[in-house]
Image 1 (cartoon, rainbow, N blue to C red):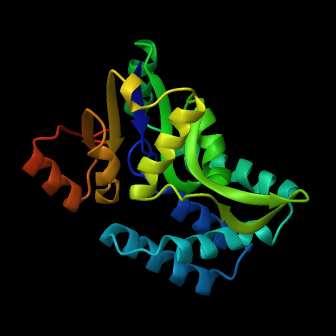
Image 2: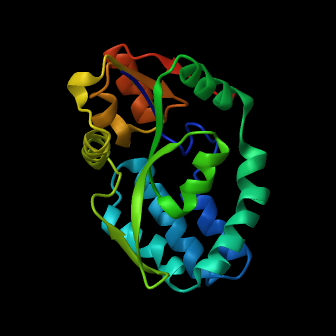
Length: 221
């Protein structure tokens, strides 16, 4: 089996869907725009720096899901897709996915962004398997809490292990594996696969890639 894993934000998309979802909620008045923007900006800076507390971030990011019905959230997400995501999808990203799928590689998106935000994006990109931070739902509503291991830093390795096990596989059955990512936060999983590819890398990942001889590609230039 050959495995192709893709980070989403700033890798397949030239934006951060987590951050943009927050900005979208600010624009439509679903959250207090000023206070939410300050926190959204702070968490994004911490993510880039590699200092973000994932539990603190998820408490912030998932709170709006608990404040509204699933029906309203779904309607908002359709608008978010139309206004923010679809205009941002680039042909080169679709071509990379199609290249792996055409060779019969098992493809998956693995992202720290929660499954509510990323599920429709994965479907739009034609990728069946999504490994994202799971959100708790009770009695037909989101609770604002996450479930299991967040798909962040070393948590991505854990979640891939769990996903492979659920499919009846483990790393010993993987003949060759790729992981495409832009972020130094993903070095743990990049170091696990046979073919790490720094994709539109941030400064820290670009330096690590140079030091370790990893290939670098840029999908948005």
